[in-house]
Amino acid sequence: MNPLAQQLNETLKAESPNVYDMLSALGKAIYFPKEGILSQSAEAKAKAKKFNATIGIAIENGQPMHLKVIQDTLSSYEPKDIYEYAPPAGKPELRSAWRAKMVKENPSLEGKTFSNPVATNALTHGLSIVADLFADVGDAVIIPNKNWENYELTFNIRRGAEIVEYPLYNEEYRFNSAGLREALFAQKDKGKAIVILNFPNNPTGYSPGPKEGDEIVAAIRDAAEAGINVVAVTDDAYFGLFFEDSMHESLFGKLADLHPRVLAVKVDGATKEEYVWGFRVGFITYASSSDKTLAALEQKTMGIIRATISSGPHPSQTFVLRALQAPEFDEQKAEKYDVMKKRANKVKELLDSGRYGDVWGYYPFNSGYFMCLKLQGVSAEAVRCRLLDEYGIGTIALGETDLRVAFSCIEEPNLEELFDTIYKAVTELIG
Image 1 (spheres, one colour):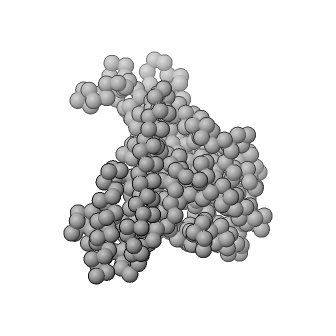
Image 2 (cartoon, helix red, strand yellow; image 1 turned 180 degrees about the horizontal axis):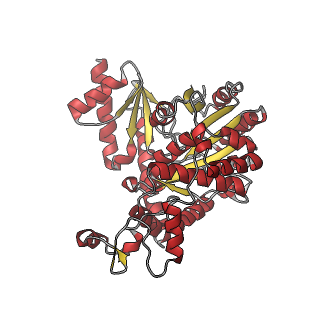
Image 3 (cartoon, rainbow, N blue to C red; image 1 turned 60 degrees about the horizontal axis):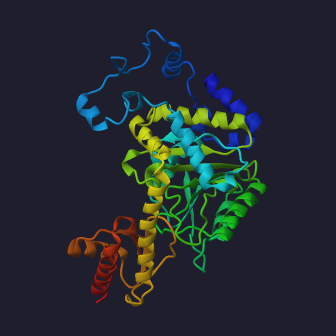
């Protein structure tokens, strides 16, 4: 094993032995090279005032070489902020700005110790880093039965982990904390579990209330006290889009110092929070009472980044940073939030109006981009195909009964026609 990896592992063993035990074989072996091209180039950037002949970019007239046809469309930005490689951990100013935003939006982080966010190539990349660092063949990854399909590719297909599902809702159609607890304690013999908490949930648009949030935290704490090492991952892709009486914070804050056997990991990003899906800017953040543990995890994360994408895109990191720094940012974001909330409320108003009879129910939703219908007497796939083929409407069929509708991408005046047409397709198939 490389001496740098050994050094990081020894630090984790001394500072947070349970976190060391959580690492996968790859997680134990990975490191960020301190004597490679990137580290030497970083040193040269700071000290080489005459000539810097270290890294594979081209310089012309004292700035990164570029084509005028590209720069003309980006004239608001200095070439140094878009053409150079971003550091593997991300643009430092952006990392600091995102951390400040996290603290402002999550008061429960007050007094907690957590890392500077490391920039990722959006959310999927962040989850992939979690899988690489912590998931080995046979490890349990616990998710609800209403989930994003990419978890299976990321954790099961890529890393060989075992997907363990529990029902998202209990009999009262609230979050099923008892199901989560049962799935966790079923891993006692393994002594390790990776739990993914995705709120607002994709596909249902559901977020737990404060009491349910406390129950989730209690289940994870009790599992840790029973001897299970828990990697608790908050997939906060849709963070901030809380429309009703749900939690309005990430559970990361409450998980941050929960127990020595719990490693809280926050995966989030500008992708959906700031409506910049194509920018591919995300973040991964760790919580620990030990600064040395956080530094070791950051080094291993940078090692994964170096080994896969080398570094994220610099232009989009710069764009997001400028937005976060803009005086108009909060006001403009609030405007978009209101648009999304009105769409969600309109959907609920239509579904609660009684106009659609008993051909479907719907799963509780209070946040995010989506909601799910639970169809009666007809398959979701049949409805999906009929809507697409006969009416030119796209929806997502999930399993036998569930039809996911992304109200996020339908203008409010068109929602009534959308659901009336879905109802028409359902009744035609039933008839």
